[in-house]
Amino acid sequence: NLTYIQNNDRIENEENTEEYEIFYFEDYKEEYIEYLKSVPDKHRNVLEYASENCPELLVNDDRIIYAYKEDLDALYYNSEHPDFKKYDFNTSYTHELSHYLDYHFFRSFENEQFIKSVSENSYSNQHIKTFIDEYKLNLRKHL
Image (cartoon, rainbow, N blue to C red; front, top):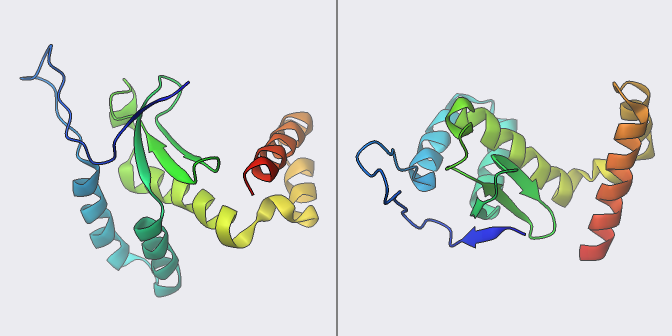
């Protein structure tokens, strides 16, 4: 089970406030919007749309650093994960927004040609097939 922390809450680590750098998602998101100015228009437009419409949820789950979860249609992040700072925010955020866009617009998980291509070219056909089957099952539960 995940522990949800209301989006945009400013949190502090009470044990070590002097050394703990607080992560403010909105600050990084503002920098991301600036970064998007360097991206071609056709990509910038959809990424700006996604960043404006995809909710972000701070979670306390050691299994998550960044993730898009279709069950709540939100991007999850865990800024207290020990590896969080090892991830580039712009790259990670773009990656998760692409899942949001796929879920809402492209729906690659419904495209048999896409599924076949991924399955045939994956490092483990069974792993990909299982992942896609689980994704479809979870998606059906929430549509």
